[in-house]
Structure formats: structure tokens, C-alpha cells
Length: 401
Image (cartoon, rainbow, N blue to C red; front, side, top):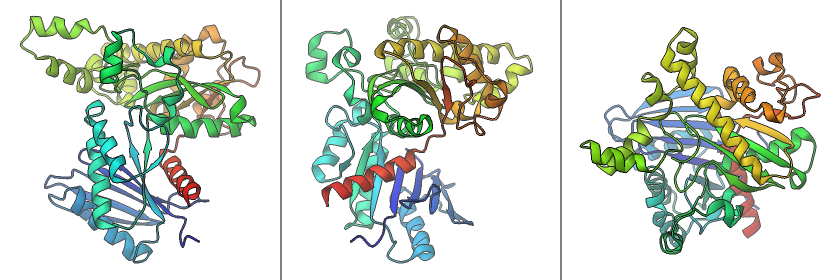
């Protein structure tokens, strides 16, 4: 019998670490940690345990030393050794090898490394975090929960690109999709809200934040999604361009002094809302400036909403019907004007927006922002990837016990 049902959840970035300790039956985490600016003199940690908050200055701390400092602090608060059953890591790219949560072994870690070239900004920090936990708590079971796993049920006609076959066979160039942990959580929540079995639902879902994607879900399984080989494909995002003619890269290389790598970097980091507006990647700032008359921000807002709707309509081809549209992510959950404008562009599906519910983000109507008689039900569901990672890690341990 396990002494604890608490799971340590780790979400690693290149210079940051987000941690949470989740109890099985609790909606709110037992503790949360944000490590920022790792590797710089400004490195610091914000730690919350219950209602208690602490801040640590950790100059020049890296993933290892920063993690050690916050785990020591958590152990002082919760007990030493730290009362956790396992650690679950968010890993962005699992390629074709990983179609579900997996206990981490040396072989699995090698598999995650092999996928790093497909997610060079995301997988390496996860690897560093896994290795750091292994050094600090060598006997603690660790699990990898993959953002790409949910989409491994896509049929070949949805995930294959129309490119030479050897590109796929030799280099595994195909569409993988991301935000899968979020979609897995949203599907379960939507089924509960609609009081219907997951296996009977056909949903459109959109995770709208600094990174944006959408998915078509049939009977609980992903059948299509907007992101592709990498998170650059699909919708307009905070700093990413989304869909673009590949010839743009060659065109700019030929006409400017930029290399292909530099063009790709600008498509990743300087495009999207930031590139159009010339002002910000944050939809809150974009919306406020657009309302004050900034034409570029207004255009950024309109392009974002139109492309989101166009992506959703395209994904509907993978479904036989649409039982509901589920919106999540920082923008999807909090930006009422964006939701309203996206639904304007989805007029062919006949959504009837309830302005009052939309303004209240559906909080008083079981997440629904459309009228009760709307042909298309639209739900705003706050996603909880940390909770999903903890759930998947716990289920994995139970199934292998």
C-alpha cells in the first residue's frame, strides 16, 4: 500500500520550472512552485504551500540546484522525506513511439532524446528536469506524459503530409499535434458537463493561449488537429505565424541576408500577434489597444479570430456531427471578445451566443456561453494539465503495480 497518493508534477522550460504537488481527490494543488530565470543572476523561486507563500533568491541556480533548493523547502513544510508517490513530467514530443504515459527508464529517456530534434525548445529542458529528479531522488518512480500522445489515434489521411513517401519512412515527417494533455482533460470534463459518455461524444476543441491549436475528437479519440510536425503549424499564435506558404522561407533567403534558420526563428519568435501588431504577443494588450483605436492591433485581433474559426471549420471534416465546441487556454477561458468574434465567423454552425453568459465566462451555466436552444453548444472549460499529468501518472503506477 502506497504511503502517499501525492504526485509531484514537473513542467520544464528552458529557463524555468513549474512544479505542483497534487493529491488524488483535491481540485487544488497541495503546493505550487515557479522557478524563473534559471542560469542567470536573477534566478528566483516562488513557493506556495496551502496559504503560505515564500520567495527564494537563487542567483545563477540551474535546473539541478534550483530544484534541490525548492525540494528542500517543500520537505521542511510537508515532511522529510517529501511525502510523494512519484513524479510526472510534461514532455512535449513523443514522436510515434509514445502513445500514452510511460514510466521513465534509461531506454525511454533515450527515446525522448531522439525526439528532441522535433521539439528543440521543449524536450531538452524536460530531459534536464528528469535527470535532475533522478539525481536528487533516485528511488522515486518518474513518468513521462506526452503532449503528442493524445493525437496518435489520428488516421493516416489526417497525419500524413503530401510529400515524398521516403520523407515519412526515413525521417518520420508527419503531423503529430500538441496540447494533447489539455485535450485529454477537456474531453473528460466536457463529457461530465454534457452528462454523456466520452465514447459517444464528437467534439471540436480549441486550446487558445500564447500557443494555439484545435482538435477534432470522435468518441474520445483525437482524429485531427491543427498543429503538425512542430507547434509552428496551424493557427495564428502569440509569436508564431501558424500556417504559411513554405516558399516564404526561400523567397526571403534569396532576397535578404537572412539564413533559413533565421527566417524560421522569426516565424517562431517574432510573428503571430506580435508580428502583426508590432506591439505585443499578449491578447489582453492587443484587445485594449484595438479598442483605443490602434489599427495594427485591431488587425491582429481580426486575423487571430478569423484563422481560429477557419481552422475549426476545417477540422469539422473529421466528424460526423458536432456535439459541442470546447474552448480553453488563457485566451479561450478569459477573452470574451475573442470568443464572440470567433463565433461570428462560425455562423455556418449557427451558434447562438448568450452575451451575459459569455461575459461571465459561462461560470453560472455549467460552462455554457450559448443559449439553451443554440444548435451549437459552446463550453468554456478551464483546462488543468497539471491535474491530468498527476492523474495519468497515478493511473500508470496503479496499472503496473
